[in-house]
Length: 615
Image (cartoon, rainbow, N blue to C red; front, side, top):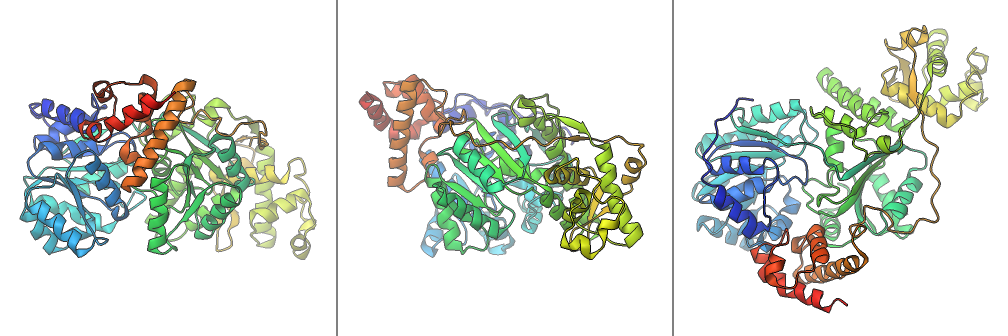
């Protein structure tokens, strides 16, 4: 990307003062100040920063410092109300225009914009297709354009939205208004495409570290996925808010019901539910503590709930970008969180099959994305290092993922691989037949099933030669051979075939070492619910933990009374600091991170009362 000369730093004191007075923070995070100064001075910017890294401040503060209204382009219509509520709680004059509003509410917001009474105005990208909207914006003073979720412009990314392609026209119409595009997810290829499509090649580019050190990554073989998930929730995240992702709508419904039947408050969310139900479930998830949302990937973008303590995947995501975006919704408050996934052979077969659809370019892209995802799942090295490498960044072993905490064993699988590949080869050459994994394993185990007898496969020389491995172990071998590209999936029924890479293994020219799947953990009946280090109060002293719980109860009651999510009042991290330091005056309370001027005025006395009443 072309370098951009430095801008004046005359805005620094003003921006810093806004950071402290409005948002309650004493200092900027890495990279924020540089971008904020640049945009305040009228420059364009492209910001790649992980979820929870403070992207929003990069446009919110310039919008408050520059004259006029910051126009924020966001695809998240269902969340605009919550975003605006959170800003208004800070004393920021914010509004939105979208299709969910009543006519009267829309008129009020439009009048506020035209009168210069809004600091930030949120719009969906499709609204900017309308000449009427563009003419309306021209009648007011625009401080900046912020293009949120900018990866939506990229056809290489995981959430392409055609409406984003039109956003380059903003600069043509308002050449003197600075633009800032922001995303949490972009490989170098996606980054380059965002810059090209939005005309931001000459903008200031900030690529912050993609590492989320507070998230523990854990991927395990899928055996009894519902029970594996239940064990995770009961032993590590009892009472925590979290998201469970499933690939299909039917799976979402079944898993939500399963969790409910086992005493865990859970709600389903998918595109097959009517809009009112989806909105109600999303609202409950944002406003209540300890709810689990079971969802397809239709849910999650822009969810600003900071205390999501886990994100679980019961099916293999289609890409590392999608996986990173989804797991990034955990632990936005910086406290410990878990990204857990169970995946198995059927996931690989299904996604390999889907990757054969579409034109050649599309198929190649899908296969590349799937290969990267499988490499992350099957690695014996640090998962975080592998994840960061995908986004073009270096890392060192983290000590906070499953492969670091319990290094996986490997084994010499050359002979078993040859047996499996020989079975596929003999069926193709001798019988002109192709079958799926289950039938191939039955042949290797010497099982005289109805299908084996029907096709006379007991007469094959490979029949029964694989009894040294169990069925589960053979499924792991098939899964890893697919991941390594030594087998491929073909046709509607997901049959397996050899690839050019199979030959060296069959000829004994390529030794093969595979990851040994761990023995399934049995539920720890002695584990106390909520005993995980990921619990927000786990590392507080007993008295502070008790006070933290009282503060959370006060926050819940206050949020319910005001009809806003609890985090709009205060984040857990702020309540933890209050519980630990026990301020006794408004002056001391104002020094707590996250307590800005407006919140101090609004909630200060109530918090001091909670502290005084605590025994």
